Image (tube, rainbow, N blue to C red; front, side, top):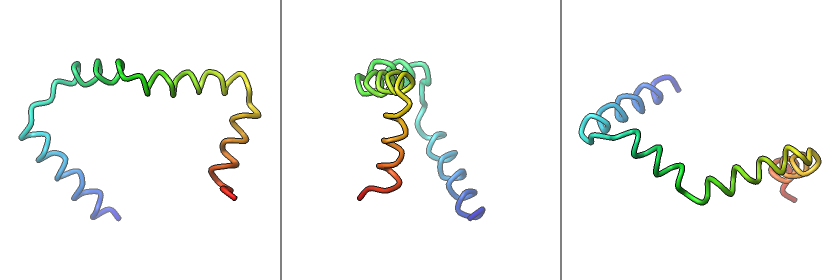
Length: 64
């Protein structure tokens, strides 16, 4: 497993060297995505209703 992790890190390092990434633009694009707003809104409503969170977690673990 450690071997796969090291390989993954090396591949990511190699790929990131070839393509210049402007992290501020990546972050701004991430913030503008409506999916993020939907997820954050769902999280806020779940915090107000702990039973919904528990029900969702149970559905993930026991999908039947």
